[in-house]
Image (cartoon, rainbow, N blue to C red; front, top):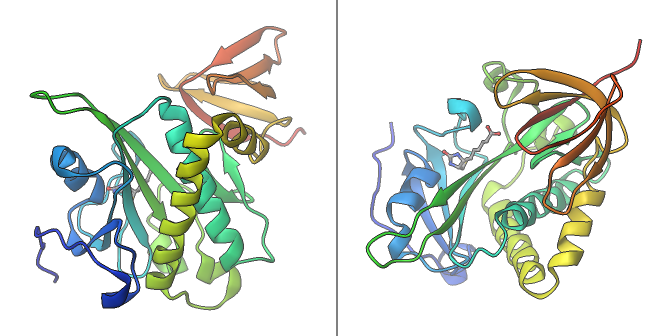
Length: 261
Ligand code: BTN
């Protein structure tokens, strides 16, 4: 059992191959929880990472299983012109990483920001808005989990079909090098967000693998609609040509590929 270390350690390349923009812990309850609690002390674009999470959190109050060997990180953004693009930068960085680690596989973003290989999830993102408090600025904490070395047994308890780089390639991944590379990819996409947000949006939209497909849209209240996922609006919403004939603009929920009978 790992003791939770609540002392931030800003690491340097010299120490262990990780980059200075990262605060790294061996064990945390959740990098999102920690980053949200220490938001005022953190700098814009800082990444809080941990080797192990004891209470990793997923969307919809799910647990994110977090043993050693994977990526658990939270990206801090203070100056958030667009939460959509902040999260898109993280999704695109994950996509770049898994493509480098498993070049023979096909990965895509599943709206809004998960990364999938076929019907199996390899990465999830949980973003949290932080309100301004006591004169300190608010912003966004974007938590990213990437399954690098998860085994089939470890993923058996996941809420939905899931995979890992190791399951796909048969080879284990050096998670520390992968984390350092992820930080680099994230900083490249964060720079793109600052310098060319339109290009970042276009890239995120292009990588949305279910665009143009017949899907089921599961709304936040659990209701379900089916139709053609025709487009993504400038604000990130799904434009769905519903099977019944209506065109709907939907911004909160999940999409799932449907195969026509
Ligand atoms: C999802 O349900 O798809 C979102 C999963 C997000 C998991 C990451 S791991 C790092 C960060 N800390 C957490 O507790 N959750 C996010």
